[in-house]
Every structure is written in structure tokens, then in C-alpha cells.
Image: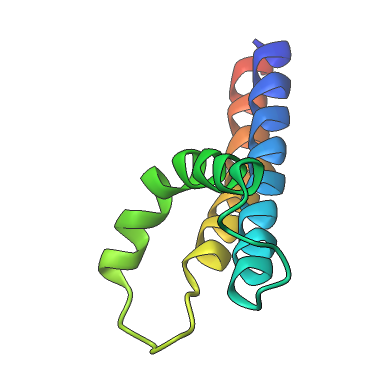
Length: 97
């Protein structure tokens, strides 16, 4: 069970990096550093959005509109951090002892 929790923690950490990559990618597209009309860039952007949108969309629905600022990735990163540092260790303690 501990190995499974370690694997889940690893997957959550990997997903945190995907969220950060999505944010950086969106900034690069927004400031015209990379061209969205390039096939590779478009494919990479669609893949990152497909990975993050299912969890970001409900957060965006709940949060108030802040104009051009999207704070939903920060909320999702905090939720991942909470799951990795609080929830998983407590489940591990329950299974060990």
C-alpha cells in the first residue's frame, strides 16, 4: 500500500509540472513568443489543455471573474500540494499503524 501511495504522490508531482508548463505555455502564446499557427506548438498546446482543463474548468466556474487574471492554476497547485503533503501521509499512517 505504501508503494501505491508513493506512486500516487509521484503522479501528483508530475501533474504539478504539467500545470506549470501549461501556464508558461499560455504566457508564451499570449505574448507572441511562440506562434500558435505552428503545428507542433498547436499540438503541444492542445495536449496540455486536454490534461489540465478537466480539473481547471470546475475551479473557474466557482471563482469570481477577475478580468484577465486566471488564478485557477494556483488553486489547483495548492490542492495538489495539500493532497501530496497532508492527505497521502495521513493515509500512509492509517495503513501502517
